[in-house]
Image: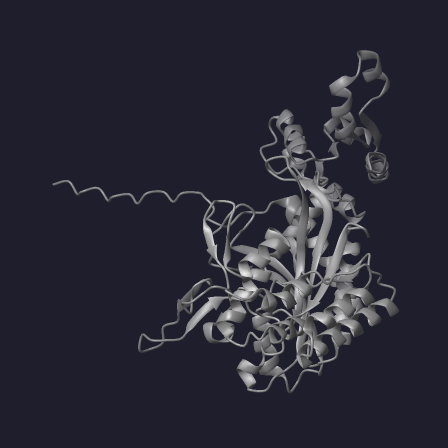
Length: 496
């Protein structure tokens, strides 16, 4: 009797999960180089590195993702199982700020106050992916926990400016815009809006200012308006007089900081919290001015409203001001690459006491995309020098050669595939973007020489040289074995 054949399980599909992507050589190297530059600036400002776990308890993460009702919506979460089959929920962190609040609450007796830390790493969001929106992305944060001084906010703005310049965004190509949530609270007070729901509606309307403009905001604060698609959007239902402080607030930006501050004072009317917000902006402007950061780099701008639901004081946003072409070939500004502000209630969830904090988060992938757009990074990363294998039995000789090259600080490798077909070895070097190949057969070994092939020059000659030029400009050199490293350095310098 024949046994039934075991059913083979289907082969897994080799594909990236939806909303995720793989990063290869050059991209990984570019990101690492950029993070290292940003970390250098953070470090120079006296911030300490912190690396916390990628996984937190759902309670520790809290409900801070926008527009999310279920406790685990928006995060990748799973339930731990204890002996009784029940356990708490864990989730991948969705930002670096919630873990900071947990770390500070847990270790506050051992940490200095204020605690200044920076953190870099991937975060995960269980959201619908879209073009350029991935479910895993890098963040790069710096925060100061434990001081209410607006000098901390001013310092973060200055540091952000330095970071952008350090990674290759020149002055004139970026602008850091600063606003204050307290000023907006003052505006709401001046309008007589105390109902939380109505306040949230006003906030959402303000957020549309850059899309619909002053007239659109007026309509949305009042009866409502027809949007571009022809759908009617209900308004907040405020009278024109009630809506006036919002319009004054949104249009208060003047030619200089003094003018903007004067307009904001008028917009908040007699509100004490509003006046406090304007005072804070005035102090920040003065502190930045003292360090030489002018309005060309950092400016007060009341139209910055993103994140106002979350922040409790000063808010900052860095945007890149140069134009790029979108997918349809239309010109548009590159937009925001970093945001932050003061959030004084995050640690309170753990300790019951309010702990003032302020910080910034840089969107690493967006910043990398911007640098590629500007041609500041990108192109090909130079591959390693390849030492070819002419004689299998002399692997030890080739190992000696490759370690000599590496010890001279040059990236190098031995060809470790099947060495039978020499053409394949050169094809491999080509695919690796190798600048040069080293060849030592039995004949060269006897004569104490090596052949070095300049692969970049060789490719250029092959492309467009006449036979005479090709003879005059050899791309292969024979040098004494002892001069191998010196010749490689010379070739690499020439290519550079």
